Length: 449
Ligand code: PMP
Image 1 (cartoon, protein in one colour):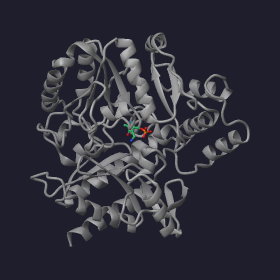
Image 2 (spheres, protein in one colour):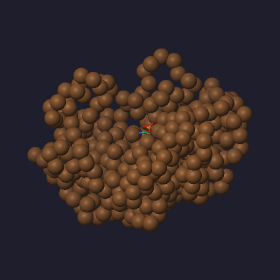
Image 3 (cartoon, rainbow, N blue to C red):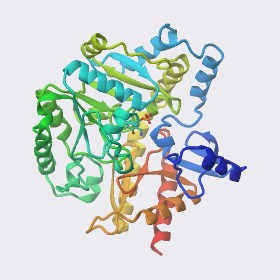
């Protein structure tokens, strides 16, 4: 059956449907942080279905909520009310600060960001949208235009007025300064830099101003930022950068949008939302992935004022958004995060994991950087630490595949696919992290031999 599945993939699925590994994994079952293939081999899932499985595969409480709703009511469309949507809206809004209290439910992160773009334009009455180089905000035509990571860079003609600005990447950017980011790795690097070191931030802010002062200066509708870039390989900005960038955008009449599709729902550990780690308050927050633990679901949360501006311009409609199944599952996910203290687990186990991988970085010349926050960690592979040139793709592929054969699944990211993304479900344990670190270490050693 494995060969037949591959044939069907090749014959009938779009060539864009790329799979990891020359012999793609055929997954049959999942249980919490584990996945099982067609032969019953098990894998520790440290990619979580692209940062989506928040509380664990087939979590019993989420399954029970889904099963109960399945037998009651699946769908009503957005023109009828149902109790699950009200219950969910109350729960979600309680997790966001004032004045972010108005919720629109959609089915995917791309839809959520499309809607945020409409809101920004309706509210500001301006047209241009700005995002970072290296950003990923979705795959609809509009959000594609906003996305800018290697293979996702739009090469079709035309565009919708989105402009990318530099990426304030503290590892790859011209001003370096990994010490400038807020990370526990500092403690083992014994960085001599003053804690308020902000050289890199100031340089990037000057560049950001240059973008704002070009042709778009008079008509900025919105600025999109992921609190940590995910697809670009867990890229962090210098401390204080986002706060100043938000101020500059607002001075020019634009609204600020935090894309929490990967960073929300406690993944970063110290805070429930990524924007909180930067000390900023966005005007619009978009979220997806972890919100539904694998069930298609997403949301946009904004202020009453911005919601009104949109309502004046357009009747925005979404047939499936906020359907009873999604809302029941979403409510159960929020309950599990709270009951099982998963944000705290993310903080504690995430810090443990970051330090363990950082030790590997000190051990191996080809591990250029280990970074991230909570359970969102990037391991950037380089030819050597001095040149910081990306390790060639085939070599990274080999390490990736070796991890798979030893029972560990991790993701990839970055322009050259040179960064491993380590993003387990929030329920992961320290012994599982120990296993993952040992497997990764063995794969790197195998590569060096
Ligand atoms: N924003 C971010 C930060 C993402 O990582 C993604 C998906 N990788 C999206 C938006 C788009 O979400 P979806 O694939 O659900 O449309």
